[in-house]
Length: 169
Image (cartoon, rainbow, N blue to C red; front, top):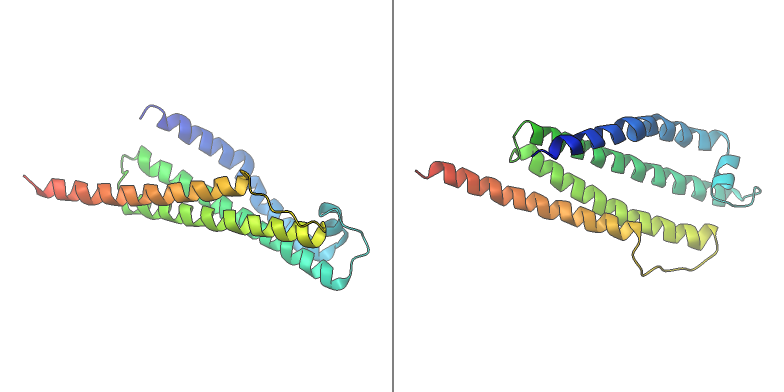
């Protein structure tokens, strides 16, 4: 348990330096893309004279990307909250099990959604039909999500075993 304070400190550092500033920045850009459409064409490397349908599709694409970013920030927040429960010496609390399960589901959905989003981006905006079968960050995100689901189930079994053991004299 000596490594737990180090992990919690690193997670808090990442939270303060990265996640907290990202929340208003993403919100600002989510609103700004409707005010200034040239921001979308510049960031997606598209021509500046877009049709209205393609521009609206690009807006939806960027908004979905922002939603995935917020979901990942929320998963990181739940991980931070779970580490706090570990520091309080409550590893088998129901909130820890639910947090692991929620983190796992968010990571799986985000990994699959991001891979679909980038496939559509390449197909529609970059005019490339490209399927990547190698190791991608999205596949790693899905694997990490599955790991958190397994961890949730493991903690659920350990909690029930602990409760049974406490009832036995």
